[in-house]
Image 1 (cartoon, rainbow, N blue to C red):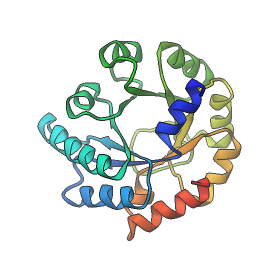
Image 2: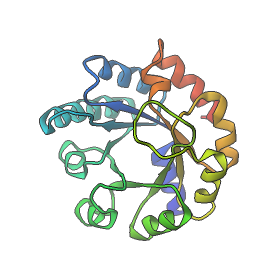
Image 3: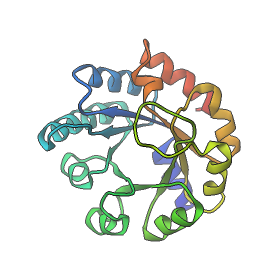
Length: 212
């Protein structure tokens, strides 16, 4: 099995992002997503203390283990290691990926955020197992984002590296096919699941579009 295939097996095609500041209902969404077959859940923190993030992430890890779901923590490799998460996703202003790799070791999944081929290749050289690319489409989930890349921008990044690329930003089931055609391995979603009236049904629809 190649390194790509090994990482791809641990990542799956659908990443569901959940917010540590999202209230008690956030854990219900995680449980529903895991039960519906979501292969990856990623914990984000918005305006919460380290303790709140730690306790929420630990609860998510427990849910994910029971469901056989991979758990990632956004930005905070220290919290990810403390709660036994499977990996960490690092943004442009977070701990440098090479430094995180030294701290986390070889078995911890590390993802980086890239918008262009040059940065993508640099992150892979530093030890990234996969890349998050976006925003693929306009989104209101996060403020201060740059312009959307569209499938063409995702294609440029995916074609420059030999690790899985996960597209994020404005993802809907209807847009999945075009992103897969552009070379994305999978997609990451926030509102499409956390804002859905039936999160489990939303996960199943997205998995269907991804071919599971």
